[in-house]
Length: 256
Image (cartoon, rainbow, N blue to C red; front, side, top):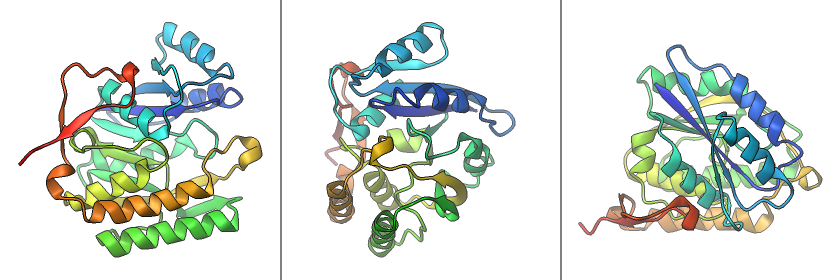
């Protein structure tokens, strides 16, 4: 099975090469190959030039947006570029450890799950600020209440999907609401989410962390909104002529 690791990046010059090397060296379950898809979301700090070098060397599948659309839009563009059987999301910083890949992917490879989340709270979240811990608990409680998800960490960045499931969703996210949107739609479409423990080393704003308080409120609203969205609008059909470089990935809901 081929695993497509999608890495959305925006101004990650200080950590990008290190993250990419860790992803390249990360072990996978037996029988799996790896494809690295990097979407540069309009970086202005030199990340674009670094990505260009790796793309020319054939180490990654790369895409550069002319302006900053947001993490969700970058992930959507990456989904269009990915050719793997499994899609795994990797942040462009050093908070998450790619050595956890095998643990996350194993249930999908063995056919035991279609979606797996790496839970920071089943593992050891190092350095997470109290306010962030509280926000994560609130979002997880909301997902469990609204969707019966039975999760411990809804907002984890480490999410892996059987690619066919992810491509079948009508995703609309632009910024950090990818996580609550994909959780809501997975549960509304009847998919169970498996969790496994992972390592986590939090970073702060000074180290480049970009999520802010307003994104927490947006995430909560996203969970509420999709609970009451008609089910037919949760699935998508591809629109011919859409190009990742022209903006966020486009799709339309079915009419029936």
